[in-house]
Length: 174
Image (cartoon, rainbow, N blue to C red):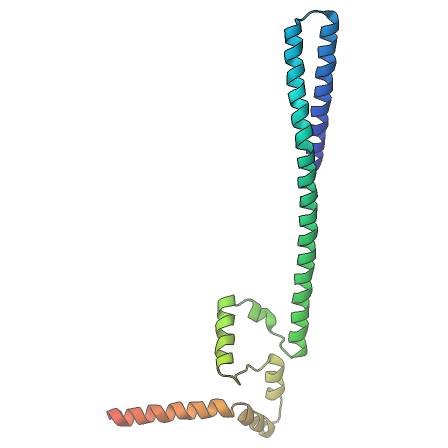
């Protein structure tokens, strides 16, 4: 597109110069009236004035475009670096399945994070931690899971108790 614009601009400049030369030749030969020459000169002056007015605008827009492209490149690099930093943090914390999380919608992730945050001490085990626990000997694994899931197991026990109380209250057998 740039070469096309440059070539059209050059063609416009050449056309104006050619028209001026042709008009001068006609005037020198005396084949046309003074009124025609004046009219053609006015038209050429309008075209030249328009061109002279448009060129700085085109240059300004071109410069603005270049600055915008540079700013976008800097912003893209900053975002790319931020993504790499987050991925590195995930790996440092044993979160190796972050691509799976990135495939989830923003809304799902926000809801999930909000629910864990409401719990105050809520958290998710990373894949690295899950693998570590899974590879522990049975006795150690049981101890770790008991510690990690103590609060959750208490909540489950409380919910089961509430369920059983409700069943008894309404005479529902198990």
